[in-house]
Length: 585
Image 1 (tube, rainbow, N blue to C red):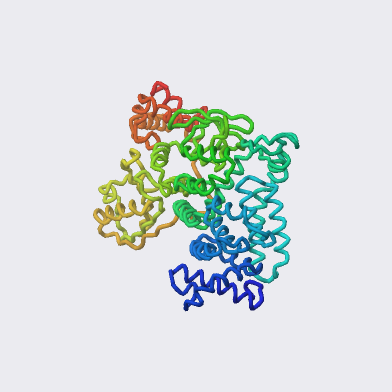
Image 2: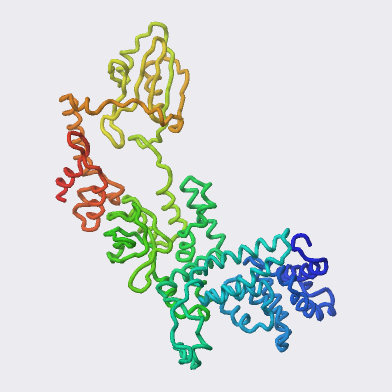
């Protein structure tokens, strides 16, 4: 009684109905009673109970999720069949229609809701009829029904769950239709003329007041209907995909935000093929032009685009998979929409233009081939993993590919020990203030991998990874056996105060020294030459020379070089201009 805000009789009546539905769900013969007499009379009781306004309000509230609605629909259909010839019996037929709406079968629900006698004063029936009007894009009719329902919600007991839930449903539907209900489409004909729909009736008794907005405008409403369907019918799929995305991002706390993201719902609609379910339940209810548009959208796959040009409110995109050019309108100006940017999205056609209802996500050049492969497979989880990887905090690694973890190793030395000769045998070089270990790494020649400082009877080694610290420990154990290992301290990068960065050498002063400048320039020239023949992930594993000779990969190479910063006058660095010249670009 407290939960529903009803009296004892109505609470008992609602429990009887919901209990019967629960028994029907497990195929119990007790659903209609324990004796032949009960089984014969229970349908009459069920119908009579559901005709009570308060009980209908409770049962609709309890049967508002897809889970459990199959059983409610089955029991209601069984009872309704027994009263098929009785035009005054409507309650169980309405419950069938209510469950059809919850399960997404709008067409079946429409057959019943259009024919219900004298039941408009029931709160859940008003909301169900408003849902049907929305499916038909009849915004003003839906608004009228929702306002009536809103007045009935005010009469529900305040300290119960029902008014809060019903008010949220009404508010969500009103938000969806507000712009369409407040803006009347132009008339199709004069009042006394034949209606253009072909019904043969006069316009004033046919479509007057029920005109539809132009499909170019209504396309947004159609998409909103599809998204609502996905969220009502595929909440588990949405939850799962949002979980995959945020886990890969390393930000599980964003899950509650990501389940609302338009992209997730769009992936459920298209890659998980819920678009077909949306259409299957609305072929007779949606306006014909919306059916055709939704069918057209089903043929549009997500892909990778390059921004070719921009203008106020629109961008021109080139599909990297097909080379097709499209114009997308109603796009805000932001860094992602600048020429040369790469985007993943599924803009949908509306006449001669496209609308990006589900938005775009920026794509790094090195992920183009991987993205095209994932999108071709239409694997929703793989797509979420790819998108999540682009927003994951970068893993900082050294030139050996090890995770960057500053590591300090401390040894004690015997009193008066001279370890200079031993450190030299270990491959370290005396640089005056310290001893350094330099070698070729996986991604760099002559890289500094470790340093050692001597302080009396203490020797302190520094590396930027645990693996390199292990390498240093082995060298010292072999060549300085008298050194006693005291400790190894590993620090996380986030332990360093970003407001107190290490002091860096003044580059201008360094480059002013002719010898240093010549050495750096020679190193950079060697590096650029090696880079031209190195396999580059952003080029699909090709070398720049190979990509320059490939008509398709050549464009990836041009975009990659365009992303390199130009070297300032007087500075020394990797020059994209020199690389273009070397590659004949």
